[in-house]
Length: 115
Length: 117
Image: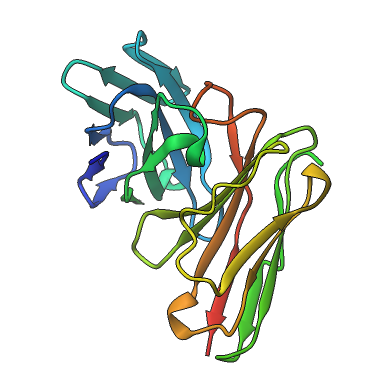
């Protein structure tokens, strides 16, 4: 069964610190992996999209890594800011056309950045 | 428009009433998705429209749920005889092509928060 598991479920860090969020998946065949940031009361916003051949991708203070062999991804946030407080969702696309775009969503990691 | 627009942003309804939720996708996006997000849960797929193809309704939880997409643009999600377990945030997303088969961006609306009392 295609699954996306994220850890930790929640995380509290102090402003200015770094953190790393994990995503493990069992989706096959794999097409791409996305990280989204979802602020409270808002829809998810895309941070990065990575295909099979990409090992790392950065978007400002956010850096995503992908190991397609071990089926693991991480999202590293550098020098956290209060505005980073949000849920971070890992989404994996199955490499098949048609049905539901074949997107499998993780349940997200809720990050709280404290002053 | 510049983004995916959903309305209303909040809806409180009495149990047993019907509700309609609206989604205006980004102009030109052929793929449109509805998801449901319950408190503390991940996104649950509901339905997927791709161009003129028959929609993928495999995620609709019951026959009380239906959705239409008129003219390949605006979509309406209808919930009939609402129940308390229908309370959730309903998110719409659109993509230039089917997001699973391409690396195109996939843009979400801000959602409609439905509360059934």
